[in-house]
Amino acid sequence: MKNPYLFGYLPFVTVVLFSLTFGVYGVGESIIFFKEIGLYQGMREFLSDFQLRIFLLTMYTLLFFMVFAALKLIATTIHETALLFFLKEEADASYSASRSGAVIYFIGALISAFGIQSWIALVLIFILTTFVYFIYVVYKLSPFMTLTNTVGLIFFQIVVWCVLLAVLVFIIIRLYNGLLASIPLSNPIK
Image (tube, rainbow, N blue to C red):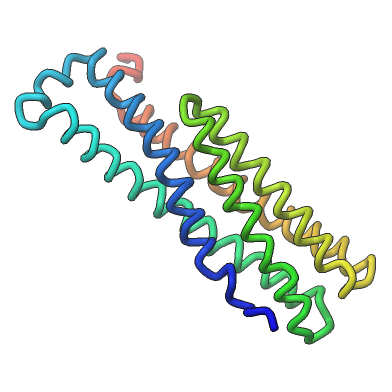
């Protein structure tokens, strides 16, 4: 008998690993930035190099942990809402079949340690892992759905994510434009 909660800890470990790899990259870039603007020596008066790096790693890891945990929550909500609409069968087998995909994210989080020197590599690894996970989950759920429901599940998730990203980009652009408009130097003198 298989324990259905065998991989229950993997989402937490995955979020921690992704947060650490993004945090380590952020620490390296922050140290370079602090040295360029001359702030590094002032910070070294209060903290040693090791203490400063640990402090920054803690802050960045916590920040990325919150971001990835929120993404996980949003993704789970969108996925389960799509299942509510398109999965007509009430079988535990379909739900447990898709849960084993957490191993894909775990492997992606381990691979992200190799891309720690580049934010492009980290983001690409995360996006590729998400794509592979999505394909795997759809493949595992497709025996429990008709072709129409499978297509509906795919399009529902794609549309909801596109709408969320479009709203986020719109809000960021509006905030950026509002910030630029409030700076007195950017407005011409009349």
